[in-house]
Image 1 (cartoon, rainbow, N blue to C red):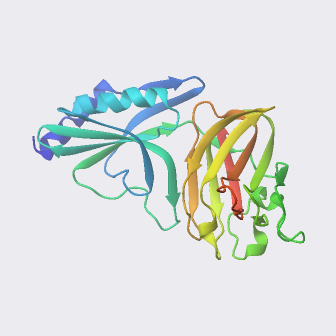
Image 2 (cartoon, helix red, strand yellow):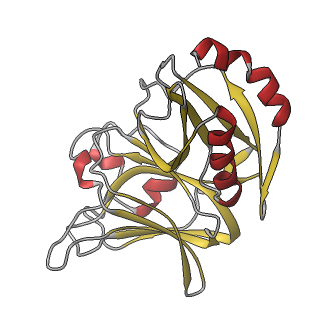
Image 3 (tube, rainbow, N blue to C red):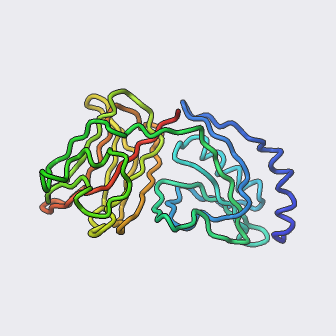
Length: 260
């Protein structure tokens, strides 16, 4: 089947999924058609499946997305005339401001899940850090001051070289966290952000939001979509240093988004 024929059945298919409300516990989302694009640039794909028809492929990814809060959209591609592939996105995204979210690809179409309004609850929340590189400048509060442009290293939250350095944000209430955005250092040493474990916890119980392998680059903006269990009153970011090694954790800003 030619792509032209595939595209002609989009209106019919969308009547099958007309703003389908997907509810996963507290989380509601909708499918809407985005006219072109690809998930293959900068995304960590969560799930992929093939089908011998367009509908068969989309059904498998739709079923997956109903059960995983991290899924924000699906890519639908024609591999050959009798094979269609869906990919469910995504665990993390790495972006620079100049990057486009979607690349053009005439054989792929993208169905996007539009989320309810989100708000950043991290601004000016209490923050602690495993150590402070320079006590005159590098406090944990720099990560929640609502400043996302740090042209010099003095504006970052910055640890010394520690075994498994961490930063912890006190949310002062219990929230279900949808996603966390990390603005990496912009002037130098961006590659120090790697093997980053992000957890959301309450009391002594922690739930994973996600893991970023990295290494990042100067000025990267890391978007991490949390698992459905990510709820709690604090968020910790920890570099998982190898045994016997040390690392340095520094970030310009951390944003924590919950559904409004």
